[in-house]
Image (cartoon, rainbow, N blue to C red):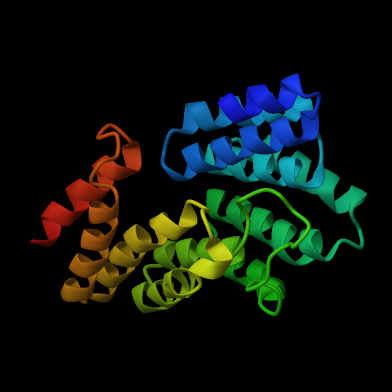
Length: 224
């Protein structure tokens, strides 16, 4: 919040909105959905910029507000018809998330096919630290929803192997947890344990009440 306040004091509403949205995406991925939605809506009051609107749509889809998420996705589609990042990263990711919300993981995987040639890239002109490799992450989630553990593990491994693209994005940490879940589904308990251990070790000093951390600890115990 300090960064948001500083940006607002300097009159840079766009930067303030981006900082707020980074917090919202992080909270959504970590399971704090009410806080995530609050931050996303706060960011939208500051800006409807491309990256802010994408982040809000992502958070809202994760938070179960599919209707508003779809509205924002459609707005991006209308406003940025020739933007490569929007067309081949943002929109496929959002539409895949909405398909997952509708319990259609196979449709989500299909929608993400268009992102394939572009998904390992990132926007050099963006100051936000979320969004890179999100098509990969959501595809992994879709494979998890289809109980295709080996395919899911392969997607999350792409994120683990490309930290230079992910940078400080929270999916860098989440990929270890999701990888553990994927290996568990695939029946590879040793690799599942190793992935959970990697996640839990990196979060050993984290707030113990973070929802996703509590889930991870419970799931890890069941593997023993």
